[in-house]
Length: 247
Image: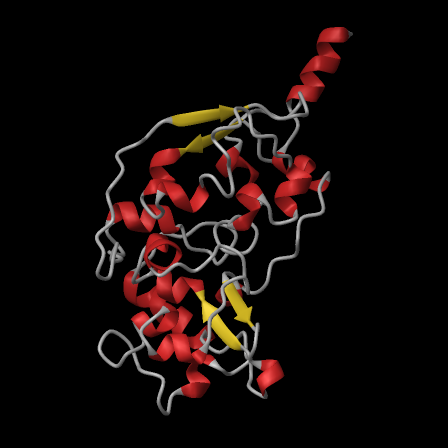
């Protein structure tokens, strides 16, 4: 009897595990990874800025914005101003009329307040690039797209980053014994990010065994900074817990 109970516990499926947590509902795939930036716009009588991660990710790796251009990883945490942009900082590093369209006369391309603004371009992108697909998020397997060469995003603008060949995988034991361990592949993350995007602010490597749980992740902390609404979402349990069974 004990062995039968143990077997029943071990065959916990991904859907059953997900049901134990309040996973946030997913938007339409063309809106997944799209954020609304509104630190100052509304209070200054302007529509909020709508930023599509998928559009920029197809051209630049995450480290360009979140390292070289110093955008913080939390929405609305960076003190972006029109003055800063016009002097070549933040968005202005690219939107200067040379790399991308410049500000003058193109305000509504960013300040439109419409989270579905670039939906049509997303469908065109999928057809043009023949991107490898996955089940959730915005339906794109971005890591595989990078590996296969379907996309070739730039890794820097002016300041070349130091490529890290660190491919150690970490085995992260779950708090619930019925949940198989999560596997964290450094290589898949350093392909997009620099070490200081995660360390020490998100994960303090000086504190061995940083304690993070699914409830904390679902609040947007730790892995949840990206894996809630930017990178593949939490309902793809087996992407992190590979030994978890599907239905």
